[in-house]
Image (cartoon, rainbow, N blue to C red; front, side, top):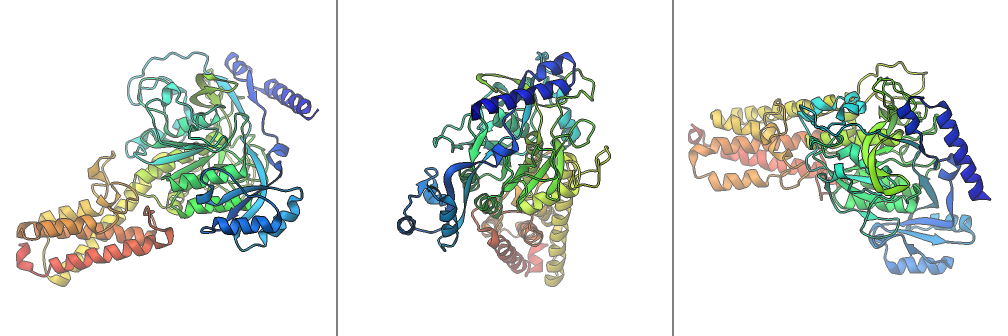
Length: 583
């Protein structure tokens, strides 16, 4: 009976959507498929009699066995990574009593009911056969002209500065399928936490659509474009073919992404109830230098869903073509900013197609086929922000709080008037052009200023001159020709060539060059200038906390950068002792 009731509710919801939808031929086709899978009640459901338990890092199997014996239960590995991420599930006939007992144990970091989170409701539409003819100019993707949502965030000017090169973005969702327009995109190894295997292939369609917005192959003469097309996608499947998944699987997926090199996580999923285990997973990723971006929810109410509402996550609301927030988008004090989520009920731009977010994905219900489909939802807004976050990171700003600050401070005021006094936009509407400009120009200017200041102080102290070669080397060490468009090696600091790399964010290379070239007196000015420039960049990053140093604990990043900067300033000062040797 419950299943029959669910079917009747889905049919009724489908009828309501189509009745009030936009009535052009294309939009009628759009509503032929509605994913009515996300009622609030089902979001808040928990797996019957199951708890998720996160043990404190370093707890041994012996301690877990002792605790299992104490409570008369068995802790089951959530995945093959449970011995690393310390996330286990446990069944009990009296889960509430067990939960109270576990929370009192010092070995337990967090425990909760294993809630089921689901995909926010989406509406899907086919493109009705738009021609596959490459367009002149950049990008030449023939359906780019239908991606109004990329124009809304000003993506084309942003591409002149950054394309997300090398940044790994984890898509924690239903998986990712190798559809034709993603074939040229770079996918790195992920994991399937639904069936505990390596293959994280999408059997729904949602995750592939999300991944396309982030990093769809661009300027390849087919299909559509993606925001950070130079980025790499890490597919992490935590949601089943029905669009649902457990908190235990989602938390394990977050930790997997953070432990395997992801710099951005996108979660276009959620639920109405908070989970301490999921909160700790988000904090874990944030503390490891990962920018976490989440959909705010599609309930059309003043309550942001989880995990978007957690501290450490960027909560994203959804806009439509006219830049007003959509009828379905949640709002509230936790909203950080808004991005295009689309509205397939309308055609405000008059192109004859529904105003959804367009990407290439497998067809829900028949995943052996793929098409160019319009989805709408905060699920579609979130990957716009994740993609721009990858652009910002590739421009040299990688520390999560700094990335968020860039995104929020560069957001623009929407052209539509707010519906009321509620926080529907957060800091404003996502602006990719201004975000990468701020990351590159503003921060690059400060790095160069720090470099000149260091050179002036040491030059005055040692009464020495660097010469033209020394000043040029200082520029390339501190900021590069940051004011130039493009992403060439000349337009960024040496320390930021590989964002977050600890070998570049150190004194290693400048000291090696000094050791090799010190005996050649004519090179000393350039070698010293380069060392001071890199040192200035490290000091800037330490003071303003703009980068995350990989493999270094987050709380030690500042100390690492300051110590290496001090070493470079000291060696630079010693090299400048002999003024005559620099003439």
